[in-house]
Figure (cartoon, rainbow, N blue to C red):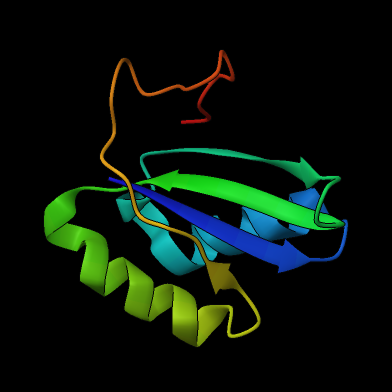
Length: 87
């Protein structure tokens, strides 16, 4: 499953560190970068369906300012639109 996450700010490395701290080994693959259209940071987190609820709870507790986008099924090789996934 792919969980889009939006945050205000511009400190992408800090958000990356926070994702690793909050989700730990559950964070298998993700894409993160600046979202110029929304003036913030956007991350697309790839999660196992069985861990989705747990991860959302952890993210809500650890990043209460974050906004979740529409959850989608992961298709293809783990990257979309040609953007590589960070492991």
